[in-house]
Length: 192
Image (cartoon, rainbow, N blue to C red; front, side, top):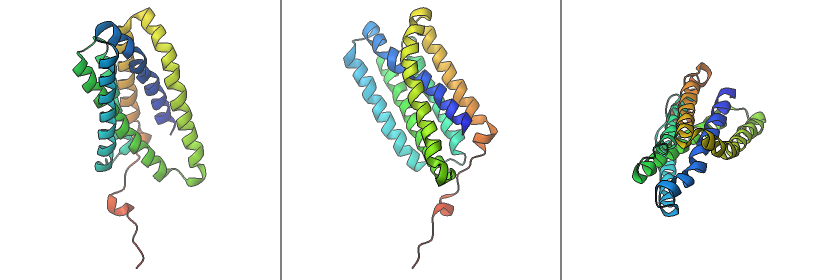
């Protein structure tokens, strides 16, 4: 539990770089709010598709698969570093939010199946606390870093940290040891 929560904290912190620096980049390099709105809408579509895909796919190692999918969060962050054309940024954001939805579903399902009911609320509260503290912290830190280091280096560093963090957490033995039961094992027989 600790390693994934730390992984989420780092990812959420770095994920904030896209959200907080993106509007400024779109004002400076593109046509501003209208195109940023299109990118945001594409991200929402990606989230919906990722959520639907999570229902269809049941990886044997859901936590590892989720963290490997979350490596894709690095793609939209890096796409702003150049920045790439609007269509490429929109596609990257769609991919990134799709990966987030996929990972979050597998994470939540795994927690509900494997954490005892008596401590589930406590575990979940730590998870939410970390998620909601580190992203706003990123909202404060990344504009300051971008002013000092430049937007390109700040975004590339955030993308690299995100990808490496998710890769490392996905390969940790304790994370990889969590397995999904086959669908037939999860179904309970009904009484006649």
